[in-house]
Image (cartoon, rainbow, N blue to C red; front, side, top):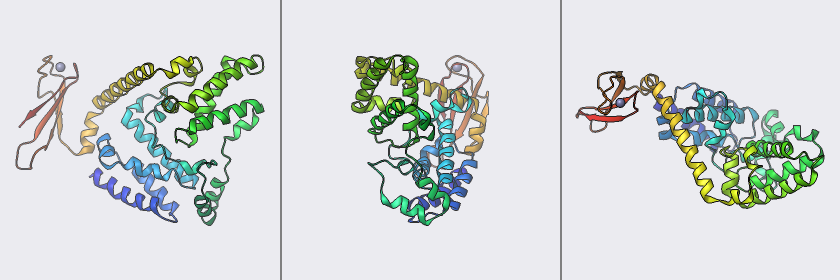
Length: 318
Ligand SMILES: [Zn+2]
């Protein structure tokens, strides 16, 4: 059963995550095996295996960190139903957000860099050592005029006040600065650019909810740079945006489930079928069902039904 396989791999991975000197080869292998399993949202929720994988993102081994990120991305796509939304993969990948402490070690900053991870890195493979000396800002920024580079670095700092310190901070800072630059070219509209920077820097640094929204791509950089301070401060505006976002996610995920139900049932090892129970709401026969043991084993199974036409869901107790 998939659940048991996941739990077994998770236990081994957890052990490595706690280890003084993790075996990076083994970690890679475990991650690859986890990724190959046809997990479901249900299994992810029950095992919380995503949390375990998040811990690997703190490792000083680029390979392992990359593999962990890939696994998380795959699962996020599963959870958010984004596997079909190839058009905006990066938006979805960050929309559900990682745990705030995730991937601290990948980006040493004055506030969180500790001696331990780099010591460990120098003792292990050369690859890990290489990861430890990686600069804290992306290489591509070096080609920018100093002013734009400084703005990006300062915006990263403001975003890091949320507790998030991974690569995503730099990606988002870059997006914001890029959007600023497109709005007010720093060479021809320097004072507008500067003013925009001060305003964004202050708001992002003092308004954690706002910074988190941007980090999760719920608020796009292009929108952010066009907002007034009032817009940024408004709780009401923010709540409404969160609500719409949540509704979209839910709709996407329902849609995905509907389309992949047969596979999900098979993966879960439960029986299912179509058309047996007409929809009590719209009378359609375009329905599906599965059986599940919800009470003790000697009692009949419960039939869970759903209508593909009107999306009505109901259950029949056996
Ligand atoms: Zn119906």
